[in-house]
Image 1 (cartoon, one colour):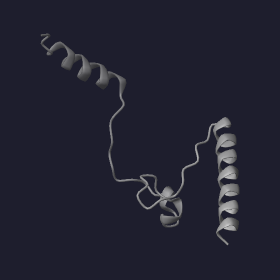
Image 2: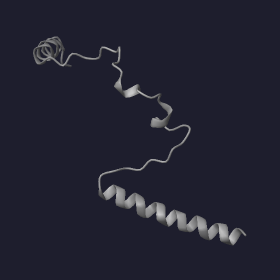
Image 3: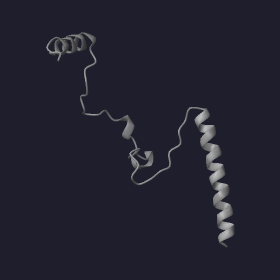
Amino acid sequence: MSAVYSTIRKGISIIESTVRKVANNFGYQLVRRHYYSPIPDAADFPPGYWEQQSALVGLDMNEKYKETSLGGLAVNVVEC
């Protein structure tokens, strides 16, 4: 029984390796699902989750703001 299991497991491993190589050639990276994985499982989100607007504000990517704020910080830096 263990020889059959070992053979099946080896076959699955070869198939998995081949599929990963093909996916990598097309620019995809396959990640195995795991409880401790930092990548969330899409099935865990409720229906309509991606359609709702987030209340988080984020950063203002205004070019003029970036130039003045970064320039002001760079001017006040003392070189050692």
